[in-house]
Length: 106
Length: 115
Image 1 (spheres, each protein chain N blue to C red):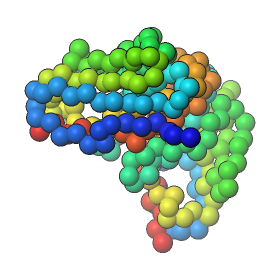
Image 2 (image 1 turned 30 degrees about the vertical axis):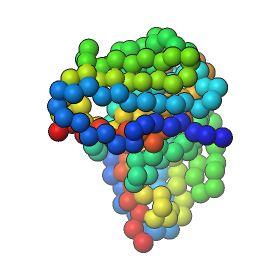
Image 3 (image 1 turned 180 degrees about the horizontal axis):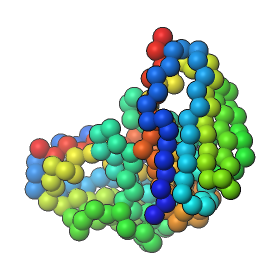
C-alpha cells in the first residue's frame, strides 16, 4: 500500500506564530485531503486538494502531486487550532498519515 | 443539511458480547467508509461500500468483524465476540461517489470500550 508520512509529529507554538505541516506520500495519488481532529475527536474537513493551492482564511494548502508532497500552512495560530492534523490520500482506497499533533499556547 | 451521523456515541460492553454500530451517511452519498482509531493513533481503514456492495473489505481485522449496507444508505458494523483490543473509536465517512476524486465527510464516531 501507499506510505503516507507526516511531519513534524508534534508541534508546540505560541499563539500568533505561523507553522507549516508536511505530508509526503510514496506513489501517485488521485486525491488528497487535510483534516483537523479537534480535542473532542471530530474530524473536520480543511481542504480537498489533489493539486495546486487553496486558501481558507488563515489556512492554506498546496499539493505538488508530481513531487508527492503536500503542505498545510497555518498563519497567526490561535489556541483553537490545537488538535491533530491528518492528511489522507486516495489510491483505490484512502490512506491516512499518523498526524501532526499541534498545541497552540496562549 | 445533515451530516454523517453515528450511533451510539458511546458503547461499553463485556468481553465476548456482540455489538452493532450504525452509520447514517449524508443523503445522496453513494460511498461509505468505516475506519477505526485507537487511542492516540491514526485512522485504520476497515471497509468501503459503493452502494450496497463492498468492493474493498481488506481492512477488516478478523472474521469477527462484518458490515452491511442496505438500501444504499444506512450501514451497520458488527463485531462478534468482542475482545479488549477492539476498544477504539469507530468512525464512518461518506462521499458523493465512489471514485477516486471524491471528498470524504466524517461522522462523530462511536467510542467502544470492551471490559
